Length: 93
Image 1: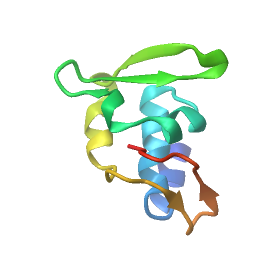
Image 2: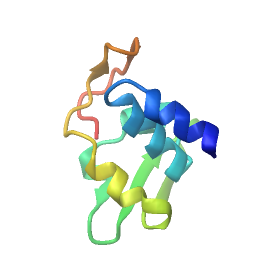
Image 3: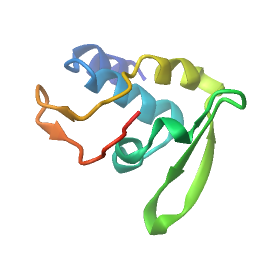
């Protein structure tokens, strides 16, 4: 876990929050990139994602501070030019 924290601490900009979101949710990069604010249930503190094979799953964001991590993401992720990673989503988290 210490190594993961070092990676997060050295990740540029928004990439750190996305790495932490993947860590606490178990989501794949593609699942996070395609997630929309409408998939976030603020009352139940859950995130619904569509993964491999178009399987839908609901993730409980309460354990491990998952809900707080999503509060650090801006309404529009768009692309991450500083890291070279881009997403093709229109309404990301």
